[in-house]
Length: 124
Image 1 (tube, helix red, strand yellow):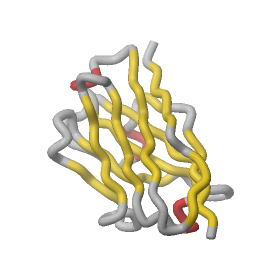
Image 2 (cartoon, helix red, strand yellow; image 1 turned 60 degrees about the vertical axis):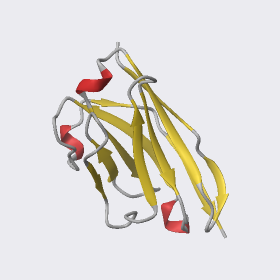
Image 3 (cartoon, helix red, strand yellow; image 1 turned 30 degrees about the horizontal axis):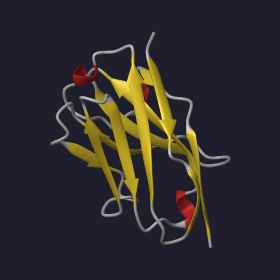
Image 4 (cartoon, one colour; image 1 turned 60 degrees about the horizontal axis):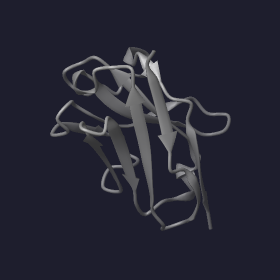
């Protein structure tokens, strides 16, 4: 079965950086758009970033544009989210997701597979 396993979350001070990883198994990784979403306490899950199979087409939420970078290594079946200049409001559980699309999508309802999430907490 398909599994997406996130790692790399933790505690970080404002202005700091973290890199999240999401390892995929059970699917033909190259056929999937990969996305990152996040959910803060008492808020709905929201789109963060996504990229196509080759990584040359990316989409970002306005709130993270210029600070976060999404990338993938198809040989390792892993997608990454490099998070820089972290802010308190970036605190959330971060999820990776997969959908068998050609182009990256921001629509949460279109994603087929989800990981369990990894907690990111930003403190001042």
